[in-house]
Image (cartoon, rainbow, N blue to C red):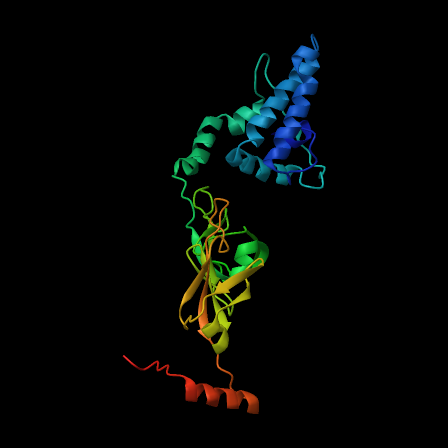
Length: 300
């Protein structure tokens, strides 16, 4: 049987190669045997035709598959020594007899391949999940490893970068980590929705941070100045005399980042704390205060 070893022509050892390998081999061989650099060399001219012919067949998925079946039979991965006659081409012909016999309808073969490419590419569905983080993690930003169950029910760990000052409910997008696309369409994306959870120190509302300021009864009655721990520093707060539980003290510009280079406010909610155990002296003082004070919080 007449045959033509297209892989050998392109300088390739076997058919376990990618399309990129074929393109690279074609460029190298075509450059080497191009008529412009081999003027008057008939052998190089014939070789150049072989190179183009090989590329015509191997660069197409459908014709390559058809050729590989023949190649495996006559040559195989171990270069089996089969008896075959190297196919020639007629005088002034562009393609060899082998090509004309098996791939003369290459346009029809390419149309078969293009049937799938004409199908509309459908992008895979996006997937969304929610990840809780602390207020401190959100304020300062961080790199976080998140383990999630993928669409095929397997656990996968993602490294995500949480930017400093991220908003509650904001989403981090991981491109191509969603559901698989169809007909060559791109994969969907994975959206990780950030949920900023309040802790025992702060609660985030909008750009403002809320915290508690615990005072003794005498601090509340007499007024004082106290140090309040903010999210990134300590601030001095003036407490006016006679302040009550539930009242709020606002410290401007010490809240959460607003994304524009500014900050929200820090609001301290006053909570008056009463000692659960009293010394004898404290007990006497409270008894004396009870006797001399006319204050009645239940009076209308």
